[in-house]
Every structure is written in structure tokens, then in C-alpha cells.
Length: 160
Image (cartoon, rainbow, N blue to C red; front, top):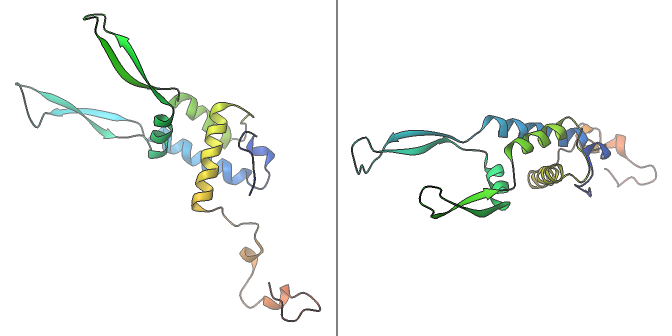
């Protein structure tokens, strides 16, 4: 099934409903699963009241992969000590990702917008990986025992 992810989903009438439902699922998954941390006592305490930060929940795995693929190392200089510090930053924004997934789910996505194209590609890859629903397939509507209904005249051996 050929389709260009840079184009809006409403241009693909056969898959528009499936794509919008998948986008709605991804939107809910990302919206409901955020990184949450809590502070607990350290298992290897170095001083009294030593605590460490632990993650209670994580963002979805698919979002973490996208975030990591578009991440880069940045650095800043500490105002207090003047020492350079490095940290991981990404050009992917959770807020923009949610906006894009909402647009796609409501079929208001636009052509050639980075986030919309990125998430349309992800949706297509997921559907190719796990299989497209076969709604318009003839076998979906076929009832067992109705083989004679689909016979082609003149060819008695051919059954769909």
C-alpha cells in the first residue's frame, strides 16, 4: 500500500479512519503516560537523610525512541562555579507532539509539517508492522458455504 507521509491523511480516503484512530490512540498514550519521579531513602546512604530520585512512571516506549533519535548533547556553563556541564536535549517537544497527534486524529493535519509527517510515518510503520485491518477485503464479507456465489461463469473450477 503506497502512500506518501508528507501528505495529509484526509487525502487517503481508504485509510483516513484507520490513521485517525491510531493517532487518537497514540495521543491518549502520550497524554496519560508522563515521566513522574519520587524521592526515596537511598539504599547506600552516605549521610543522614540521604535520598535519591526514582522514576514512578515513564513516557511510552515509542515516544522515548523518537525523543532519543532527535536528541543532541548540549552544554552550559555553571554560574556558580564556571564549570561546563553537559546534558541531553532534543528537538522533539511533548507539547508539539500532542498538538500534531490531535490534528491527525481530527484529520486537520497539514502537508510538509515536521511533526505531522513524523507521526504519520510512525503510524504507517506501526500499521505495517502489526497489520492493516482488512475491512474492504472480499473475504471479510464472505460467509462459509457461499463459495458458489463468487463463481465466475464459464470457469467451474475457479472459486474466490
